[in-house]
Length: 219
View: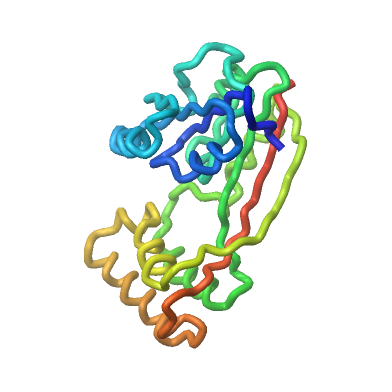
């Protein structure tokens, strides 16, 4: 979709602590990352000392015009889905370069996954999220043409404690709750696990997700 690989330069915007960087490194090529949060940049540098890590935002990327072959936003574009961000991506992309937007989305066809969403969603407030679809409002965008869209199912394998409880409590709007409300969410999540036969007393479970991917070309 994006043409990442040896001899190519890829920029991840909103790279966080680098969860997606590991996948980019498997493709080869040169990797740069922009992350506005200092604490996350520090973790990113420790984990991947061989990539270029920069302070910046989607609207202000410290790179020259036409300097990267691809821009990737993994689990992040909904936070900065603005015309200004797209203009900045267009500026740093080389002619014919690609923009990739990627999200992991819970597969709520599983009843217990839908039940978990029912526990967490009441607390989301106005937090930007993929599922609201608000990020789509900036498209069609000047200077970009859509070239591909893909949906792939996969699973996060691990203990219920890791892939359900800890993952739920790490969601941005849950982690921002007062401690007593976080405790309420944790209690409800553990109760869901306890009453769900396919989850309770299991050392390992598969949390189902769908990865959604959108690619655009600079024109």
